[in-house]
Image (tube, rainbow, N blue to C red):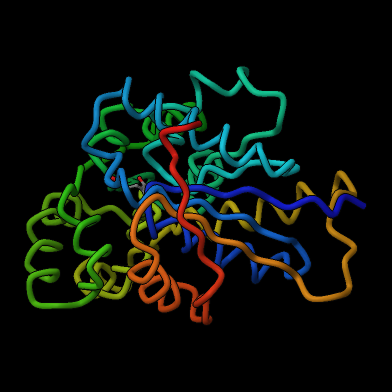
Length: 269
Ligand code: DGL
């Protein structure tokens, strides 16, 4: 048994879509979440800045003696993780591998759409990994930079969200994909609007849900699954306003998180 917490981070609120699924799949695991709300978004930043932020986020979570770190951010997972994974003496899991694994199993026509931040799409990581499974796969990529601010402000299915979904996804829909990777952990909050536009024939892949399934298998295999029987503990840390995070985070997680959020100075790490 290993009762140490799982550390999870994202640039902001989006990673809570992964946390929600981890809570569901692994209800006994303690979780420490860091949302870098003072520096969101990561997706429009240079690779060097994403690397710097990712290293700092990992160093911060490591101060809690966590047993592993989940990068619940598509941007940091694709633009930073391949370069930094060997710098730390702790298992670090990103969201790309699990999402790709699910997508290549889902597609029948070998046409997969990938949407994400500019950083994620520019890294080419999703396409590289999909083609490593099967070089005949056709991948249609699109960066959707306006989606993160929409989600961070709670615009999940407003008219402006619908307009932007149409603007960003038109080409991918016309290409006839049957599977679409929501390659940024903020995007599952827009899943309803995206799915209505893409149609019933298109399977949406939620990276947070896929990484949670992966963790369930991984922790069972290593008998590291927490054996706690008393109440599981969740702690949340942010680098900016607590009240906004408590309010929207509570909606994301569908659970009350008031009083469980602490503000920290991430620049120190
Ligand atoms: N949730 C993030 C991702 O998965 C980050 C979005 C951003 O900070 O730009 O890419």
